[in-house]
Image (tube, rainbow, N blue to C red; front, side):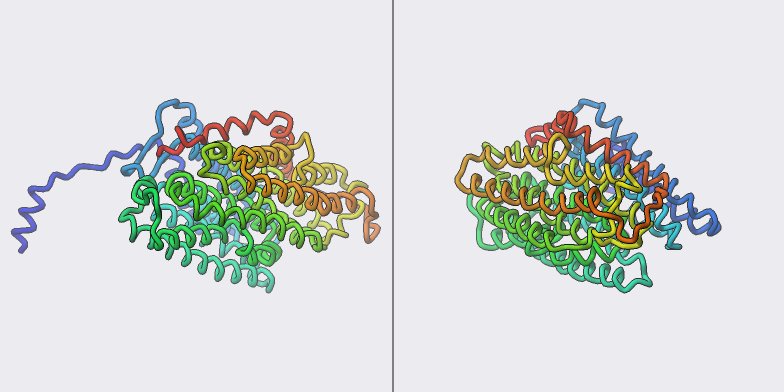
Length: 506
């Protein structure tokens, strides 16, 4: 037997796989950075733990460098491992997006972790691991790699949600997020197994070819289960029940991370599947997403109207905003609206990151003084912190879609993508979205009325000492929110880069 094996090995021609190391550089830098942060955390004294935030930020900035060099290269999309992992303009834009969001979240987290005595090194290791999963998600073109990337970004997030381990609300947040997340992953994996079983492949482009013009019953079930699994990740109704309690109980920087980065990663995976693997299944996912979009924006807005806690209000606002992002995807396979739908989703995600992270940055700064998330505690904010009041006004007005801020362009793009379909259902969905835009404006401006008109509830008009990292985060988010609204071409170009004819590599 040994002789036979030796003979077989001798006749086998071994060759190293052809790997494009430049294309994988962002992921490799993150992996190396994670190990450096973990090693230093284990070997430095407690008094120097503050350096972990700066080091983690440098890791994310270093990962930007190869993304810039790859973007400068105008060559064709780089396909690795037989097309299972693709680095193209679409992937590069989203990788940069995830790195930027991760960097802003580090700025928001630094002082809260230091003041609260939380485990700093471990937190940043988990954050970097989650961001690395998101970066992988942008390039994944295979069911297995998509699922692995999804779990890599989700598992650290489960632990981060329960980071305040002595807080019962934080523990509840982590447990709810974990249990429902595992349930959603199981549903998604069950659907993927049906798709693999009926097509014989996990590569997205081959799945589309194998499905043909008419889906069988198992493929219909598989597509429906996969879409339902990702609906949880983007907190779409009726899979949204975990979001409010998790957002309220988790540390506020983690809430900001979940509401932007984790949601965006779910959308990225869903977009990739709908455009690359599931075009033949338009009759299955189209109606599903139409119903989810209408329900998500409506239910999210109606419940947000009743909230008195600003974090819970922003949680339901996040649910509602997810409905606006889902809206164009109902027509992803439409020949007239498909390209503009992809553009609308990418643009909305970029703009949403600026305005939502900025809103949470203001909440973090104010609650450092008030120790309360109640909307009433924001009364008189303009009197003792005019800078924060102006910043919150910019973010709330942008979330409401008021020109000339970035939110108006994101919503305009979403409406245009839906109306491009020129069908009765598209016009009806646009009407629902228009009504929800008005509803959303009422609770956003209720917060602003409290900030500008009401008196401080305790009469305390002492100014707020805003830490420098939060000031930096506010500077980034305010500049982004205004710039996108005044110069919409800045992000419209990114949307154009993600046209499927060139960017998806398929």
